[in-house]
Image 1 (cartoon, rainbow, N blue to C red):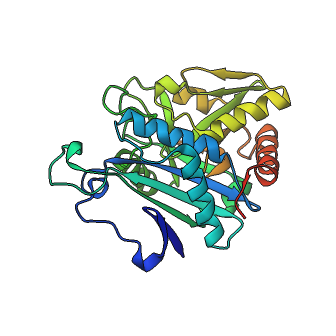
Image 2 (cartoon, rainbow, N blue to C red):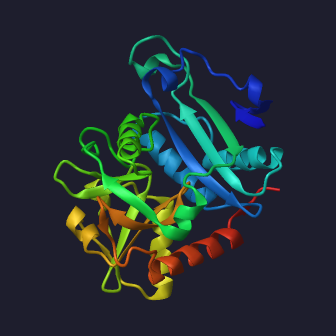
Length: 289
């Protein structure tokens, strides 16, 4: 595997960062997960724009332009000779002195991985996921802005641990007010009486790239979209439910906390969204060959 690391492609075994890198020591950095399908990188520009927004929010000065990062990403995927897969692009604060002070890091470090990923077993895309609600809450915006895709992912990791220990692959995360924010790594949608509902960004949801694609598909299908605060009750009584994310793509949900959603099978409208998403992902994007 070839890894892009600070300006050059290197073999996986040579892709090393300093133990004094603040990304490792303090989770100080940002990242993006990006998909590529059929020789094209899906929504590359949107992902890189969000990466730069995250960096700006934490005062991490990027020495590259967005156009350069897009070019580096394409080069990395092409060098690995795969047509379908997943990109992890990470920018750390860089190596510096011990201590939290980010100004002691002279320059940031960036690496790009292009590989494959399988977030959930295939049968769950056919039959749906069973979710639980975890006790770990989504941090308040005043504590850690949910729109920043930072390397400090411990909140999500511990929520994922709760899900697995509770016998589920995924968990719903609530904010401090008890409203649904998102899942451990995915945005959440429900369908009720033909309308598509999803939590407000201000309730702690990430402004996901795949989330935005679903809103575009809803407009194409003529489905009304409602963004509002949601509770577990709203999910319990929904007709359908599904999750979205770059790694997860679009995956149906058939229960929450042992309450069956709809008839306990992926719904008709959910299947339409899934099919439309796959059609779009396979036919559009930035070529990297």
